[in-house]
Image (cartoon, rainbow, N blue to C red; front, side, top):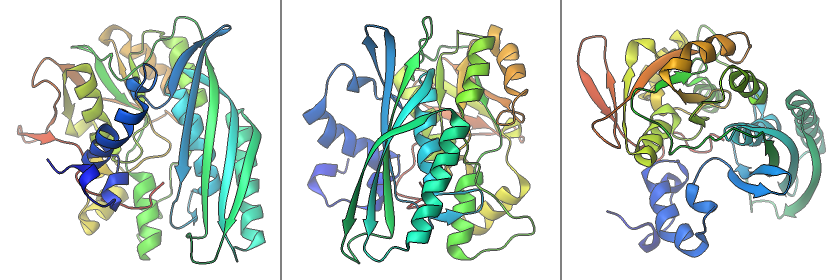
Length: 339
């Protein structure tokens, strides 16, 4: 195995895949490990005298900063809100920190800030603190944004990537790959018959509907960097189970399929910013699915697979032709600067 700490950092270390896992395991966890961090879910969850809190942080370095379906500001709010929601929390408060390159247009900053305010209102959260730093021209790439968020978890909700059990079902909230292909097509100047827009959206309302249908939901994850394949591989490893996907059931828009074929990408590894994966007991799957389909964010939700006994810690997919292929963690970086 290549040791992350013996090499220079490269783009693959930010992919959310194998190199990211090595960097985390070999550099960060040995220094920072504790009982809260060691769960390695999208948010830290800890007890407070009023109940359970969720806390998360993320940094956004996307290129381009404006794209069809959103911009870096909307992305920063939605991404942080969604990480909180994936722990079953109701998102409440955000911080925001800007790293801005000297010479950045004020009108673009105003546009980004207005977009963040609109997204925060949509998500039902307040931006309550922040920071701004300016660096010399050429020291950064236009603007980077860091956000952190806090949310409250209701009693009886216990969600974690380590809780998938055999016979549970895997649900996706809608079509995959939209965000990554939207960014890549704009970055590369590609044009398709139908414009592909990012799916960037806050998912707190969707999760609230799902939890109203069942508090037995085991796992929630938003498949951002590394896409569906990487996130499900992480869940399989943490839960010590296998996951079997049905390719025919995975919703992918035709234009996304076409773009992936043109670019040589696998849509299972392409980033999403407005979709979630849920693992729920088979007995509760119908109720959860019906609740999801009453929302805009979950109207195209589908059951795409099942948790199985073997092969442990692996994900595989059955094709319509009766064959199966192994789905592994992303190696390297398919789409840099995607979020």
